[in-house]
Length: 220
Length: 154
Image (cartoon, rainbow over all chains, first blue to last red; front, side, top):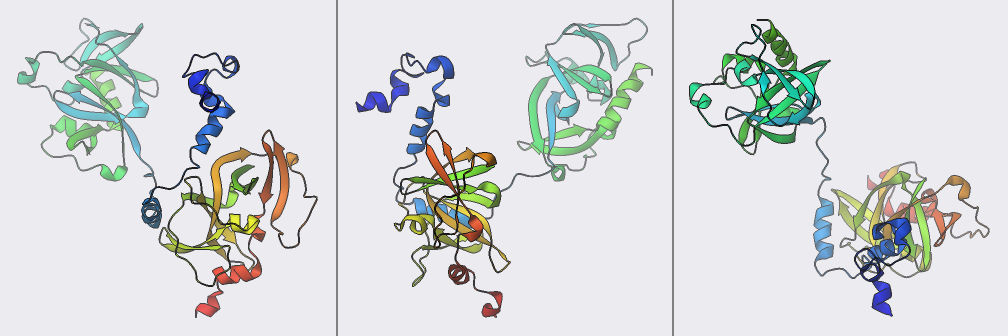
């Protein structure tokens, strides 16, 4: 009997030929009480030899709790440096798209209008806003991971090109350090603090200053 | 209300999760010589010396078998002496939570004077579950054995 009935999920279930009549209703074996019961019975096995001692040591330690008040940030790379914005202001990452200039309106920071998934957005160069661009970097070939990052706050939406998006990370407020004096003056003014990500510094941009600075660049 | 289900003998019992702090795996316990049989021992729970009562002994007379599914349920025990203590309850087959509606509970038909902690019973597709009243789990004597009054400690 036994194996066919004991391991029915391997015979007629999702891991077998799928002939079990219950599957029509349950779709997957993990919703089936037979599968769940078998899983629980798996725990009715004898203890490994060193188990009791190991667990006693674990239970004697203070309970680990998650850190409270952490901040979710979106990290990206600009001109070889890493920066981040709070994830709540991040709205979209898009493929690079051409930027249409507006005659007599564009400047070093405000580059024009970009079509992001059918929506026309004001495109800025945050690298220029932060004074990061240098001639050496201008001549570098475009990296393969280039993206357009859409940020928004209180109805204002902007898009800016970044070299790479490095994903969402969590930081604790106490991880934020002082902004070093080696950053450019504009970068320092717009950065709230520095934190380390895999040992490399990342500047967290201050949205209270970044968005007004972006708005100002439209009418210099 | 949610019940943490465990098994004693062939019967299933439930504990209201309200007072449960944590469910620990089985650990090595320090024996308490001359203690009543339901006292399984003591262990270091996060820095606090915590007594463990074996529910299987309390309910069936036999000790809990050492299994992966045999676990220690840590509860905040409001004793008759008015103080709150951390107490470990050793039980078998602690692998499941049961959703239980208050109106589906049935009052006990047999009351046993020696076991005032036996509470209401509910039925589900796999049989019946009896809810244990944690407040009445320990007799006065046992409570004083496990948690001697402060005065006695000096």
